[in-house]
Image (cartoon, rainbow, N blue to C red; front, side):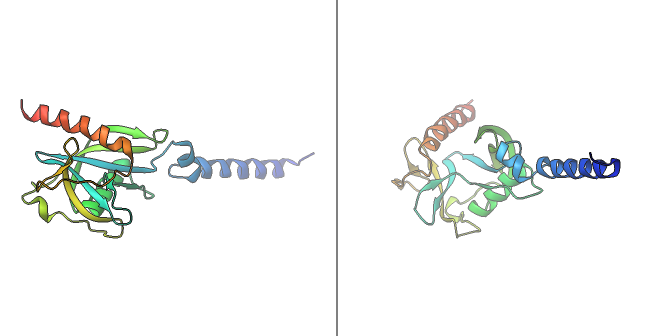
Length: 173
């Protein structure tokens, strides 16, 4: 039989382990989808959606990436977008969740107007080789060039076509 002081120590140890495992940002909660794993932005412009071309495979990518400890989903989306497109953004409404609601995609707007799309470039070139502004329906870049690259995730194009069509409809009102 356990003595009273030993049972209190055991209780505190178990409680402490539980607290460490389920505290915000912990590995356990990330595995359960209870916290943010990743986030990103869909940035709509009159010419298309701001996207990246991956360095390694040349695939088309939504600005999106891994969460860092202490960030909100919106913080992660803004940071990843800056790293991958060079754009400072205001993070707006939630568009979609993925991976058991632990990855978040937001509609974002640049904090300043984009005067020259050709000047967009990634801050971190280890993942993104080029920033493009693409009409996902026609696959035309802002400069008229047809983009034939594959998508990082096939479903991204379908999602972005819907988002861009909605954006164009709202802008024409």
